[in-house]
Amino acid sequence: MKFCVGRLTRSKFHHKWMLITVFIVILMPILIGIGLYLKSRPLLLQANLSELIFSSEWRPLSGRFGFYTFIVSSVWVTALSLLIAAPICILSAIHLTKYAKKWFLTIMMSVIDILAGIPSVVYGVWGILVIVPFISKYLAPLFGLEVSGYSLLAGALVLAIMIIPFMLNIMIEIIRIIPSELEEASLSLGATKWQTIKKVIIRKAAPGIVAAMVLGVSRAFGETMAVLMVVGNVIKIPENLFEPAYPLPALIANNYGEMLSIPMYDSALMLAALILFAVVLFFNLISRLIISRLEYN
Amino acid sequence: MRIKKFEEKLFRVLMLLSTVIIITALSLLIVSITIKGLPSLTWEMISQIPKGGYYFGKEGGILNAIIGSLYLALGSVFLAFIIGLPIALFMNSYLVNKKKFVGTIRFFLDLLWGVPSIVYGAFGFAIMIYFGLRTSLLAGIVTVTLFIIPIMVRAMDEVFKEVPRGLLEASFSLGSTKSETSFKIMVRQCIPGIITAVLLSFGRAIGDAASVLFTTGYTDYIPTSLAQPTATLPLAIFFQLGSPIPEVKERAYAAALVLTIIILVISLLSRFFSRKYDKHKINF
Image (cartoon, rainbow over all chains, first blue to last red; front, side, top):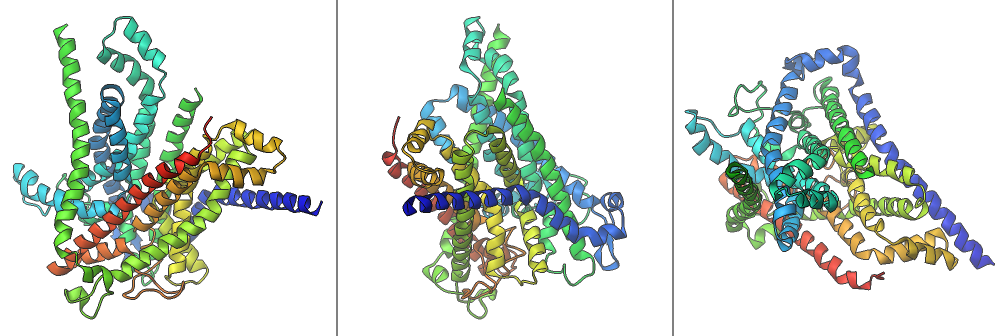
């Protein structure tokens, strides 16, 4: 009998431990939000939020913190990278699922996995080795400009390469779960393969593709090291693609050293992290809702 | 009719082109890192810690960063495993009939997965200040653990989800408790998936720089206790790359090569293990 009690107690203990760990996970996003809010509160008490977001005056030494420049930079880098990556991903996803041979898809899945696992610092090094010289030597002279290459465009290109595996993976999954009956019905009515893809598959997969793109955007918006290394980091709203920019994550990462020596500076950086967190959470929320609805149907 | 055919042809070319771009990007990445990194990658570099004047191009290596990164990754993967495995098991054995609750947990995990690592870094820093800790290996391990838990749990969850219900029911009907079923049946059935999940999070832990930037600090020595600051490989690359001295920059490329090799080896290992243990699975 004692043996039996032991087993049941152990089961109960495991149950408790599992419950605790699950609650840790559910509490985590809330805890992160609260923690960052508490740290950025001193600054929020001093100036109101819209002022901080829409002012482009950044002078930490005199206590002026305006995030506008950084937010604009972030939005530009993210939007550009999506513009580059999205068409490539959609086309490649259709090619791999509908036209390519099966063995090729298997190989590409491994390639995607490997690409997704490469650390962002390595992407940054690659950006410095390949993208930056390419821009300064070949691309910018085409427009008659002489630049260092550390620019908005470099950041966007590196980001695009980074989010491609991530988005492609989701898009392939989305296209795969479309029932093949739909495709067969369309083909049997005499539509060509391309017509079927255009009118049936893409239409059916559209919400999923949008969701994948939104996820890609949220990934790009928060990406730090790779962008930081190639984007130039000059506090000025970029006027063209070849000018340096200064996105939010780079701001946080670059200034952590000084943050405790200047009053309110740490609050400002924590507020930057909070803004980042809120934006990314919002994007994630939307796309996950779309995806879960898709899977439900 | 001709236009239709032309459209299809055009798009097929475009599609092929995008796939080629992706493959080129990967090969370009690996080739350029190898070409730049290989010349300055010496045995000395991966077997010694930085000596005096290292950052001006003199002798030494990045052993401190390699060991530091391994400590950090091992510690955080261990912690994340202790927390993550029960969550994944819980969702798929205890809550197997509560689809809605499991859906909610998955939703939260996915949200956490999307949070950028720099936010975890800032949060870790806030906790660190709150408890009066200084930059240390321990603070880094805690931060990275938070960062990899969602990755690990979701990866395990995907495998546990596939365990056939009949297997669980057979185990229950023989009188085993839920915890016995999950730890003795599910874990054994899913070992390849668990190894893959662990290796995946190990790769993430070793490669992430933004979350450790605030919390682990940087030092030239190999840490001997949890309370000491620790150098990490991604940060070693980042700092050396910022140097104006060419020799130091060259070493940053070599360090990037080392990191890439570690990641590739982990990726290959996980493939190897998942094949190897796959044959112990009960097939239905």
